[in-house]
Length: 183
Image (cartoon, rainbow, N blue to C red):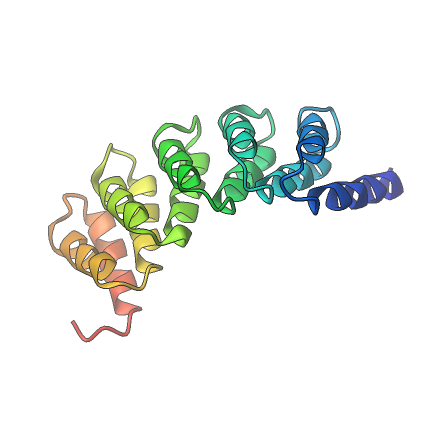
């Protein structure tokens, strides 16, 4: 019922605020792996991402790749983006390439753009051209548009001028129009 779901979610918050705590991580993981409603499992995945450990990252990567509920996989991808480890950037790059569903790949590319590291920009450039999924390429262009640096802007100009897919070029032109840069 509604009341017990709310209580469970409050317990999850209480566990989640104990950062870098192995017992809390284990309890949260067991909730994600349980038959609880998806919103309860989503909350547990979110709080695992607040743990900032390689164990948390490793667990979330499995969830992102294979949970039966898409909302839980999406929350795991978001949670990965909140982990303050370089390996979390690598995980988002990997998910952007290999997640089983297009929506999950797009989410990974989006959150990669929010990290704004040099490695993120380099990989977003690659995602803008890689493969043949126009939707993921357009998501990479959007993610580049959110990074306010010279390198990302130069890449957007290059995509607008040279990308082989007119839909992706159009997306780059749109987001360049949204920038304040005189070029």
